Structures are given as structure tokens and as C-alpha cells.
Length: 179
Image (tube, rainbow, N blue to C red):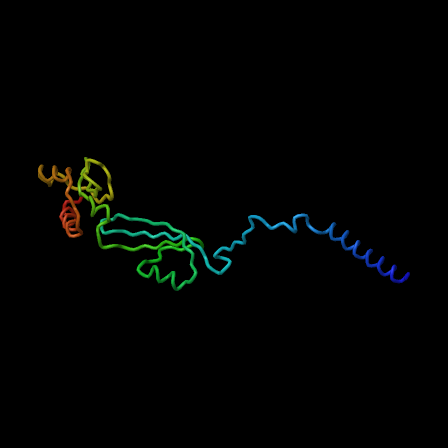
């Protein structure tokens, strides 16, 4: 019977040692579920690259519209296909500038564009009437002395341009009066 007691006592000592060891080394919050732990990955973890893309469209009237966005490039082929109608102007590690020229009037000019002159005789494209002073683009100075009083008054009031043809006709006409 002594050997049975000795065996039981040995087992109890081993179990007590394990319990003491685990209580010392086991983290206090090991049995509690981890809160607010969400494993997050970035596109870069999957081999993608995020870049700032600037697109600049310049219209026939000289107005340029820019758009800035952050884009993730998952597939270079898909990315380049998206910009096949654009010209890559500059590229750095984290930024790309694409440009293109549009053979139309800018949206602001189509909606409410006027050609007119300021007090100095400089020809401008305005958004709205020239008296409002919202200049979209500046072209060149005119030799006002070669215009009649009525033509000067008409230019100060503004000439409505809603179509490319009108715009080009006026610009060609005023090129002859360029200083």
C-alpha cells in the first residue's frame, strides 16, 4: 500500500507543480475574448500600390479643370487602360499627372460664357457678363483705337459664346486687332 500512496502523492505533487507554474506564467486576460481587435490589411499587403492621380483637362478656350484622386493600382493593365485617352505628363513615386486637350468650350463657357474687354482693352473670357468680373481666361490686349465706339461698347457689355465655332470666329477676328 505504501507504493500506491507514494504514487498518488507523486501525481498530486506533479499536478500541484503544474498548477503553480501555469498560474505564474499564464496571462491574466488569456481567457477573456480580445475586444476591438480586427486584423487589417492595406492594398500594399496584397501587392497593390496607391497613388495620387491628377487629371488636367484643357479646353479650347484655355480653361483647365483639374481633378485629384487617390487610386489603388491592383492591375497595371487595368490602370493604364483607364487613362488611354490621356497623356502622362509627370510621374513621381506617389503621384501621376495626366493631361489632355478637349476640342470644346469649357462647361462654364458653354453655360454662361462671354468674350469681353476690361478697361485696359484686354480680351477675356468671362463666366457671366464682363461687369461681374468672373474671368475664366485672358487672351491679349486689343488696339481699341481701331474699333468703332459701338464695337467697344459691345465688347465691354460682352459677346455671348456658347459654341466652339462662335468662339473661334471671335478669336480669329480679334487676332487682327492684337497689340
